[in-house]
Every structure is written in structure tokens, then in C-alpha cells.
Image 1: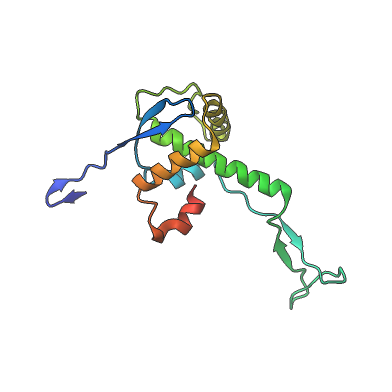
Image 2: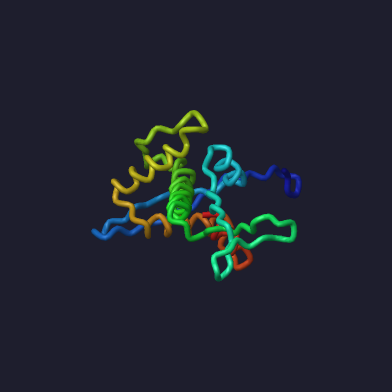
Length: 168
């Protein structure tokens, strides 16, 4: 892509500082999320779970049926297993945002080996979460980091707040 005849280069970063409870500050150089981030999540097997369905019943416990006589199904978004899987999904996306946006900062080295196959990205995200936790990251730190990345990636405006909630 060119702008006014000059090649557009999308390589940029921003320095941010994460204050720690002990008074130290972690300096970080973050990069915006690539346009392909959501697609790469799907390609790596990081998929948002779908809520299970259950048969709808009337107040007497009888199965509700549609015009064709088929049982009416509804999403059960309160199912405990679904809620747990949804929480894991959001956790995996958030820590992969941290990994994606910090991997260019040469001051940081991660011990979790980067997977080479699609099947191992879920395990990688879970192991990377554990590595961050052992390094002293809190849930608030990850949220703070994702907010900085969202600002840098232009995902923080009012017009994208609703879709941003699903993005992380």
C-alpha cells in the first residue's frame, strides 16, 4: 500500500509502564494487534464455546413445540460447564494478546515454548497463563495490558466498545 506515493509501513510500537505493588515499574514496548489476530485464533483452535441447548417447557413442564411439531430449543447460557469454558476462552485470548504484543520486546523472554502445530495452541495459552501468573501478573494486570493494546490498535473508541468486548 502507498500513501502519496510512499510505501506505508505499519511497524510501530509504544512504551508503557506497569506499576507493581512493590514500587517497581515494568517497562514494556507493545505493538498493536495484527489485522489477522482473530483469524489466527480460529486457525490455532482458540474458539469461543457455544452454549448448549435445552428443550423449552411450559409452566406445567410440557415440551413446547413449533408449528411443525418439533420441540423448541433454547440456549442454556447459565450451564456451569459452558460458563467455565467461556471463561477459559476469554482468559486464553487475553494472554495471547499479551504474548502477541510483547513478543517483539527483546527485554522479555518467555519460557513457554511456542507451539508448532494447531492442536497445541490451547495448551500453549494455558501454559503461558501459568507462566504469567508465576511471574506475578494479576487479572488486573492482564486487563490493564489489554486496554493499552486496544488503545494502540484503535479498538477503544465508542463505536467499537461493543465488538471489543467480544474481541478480548
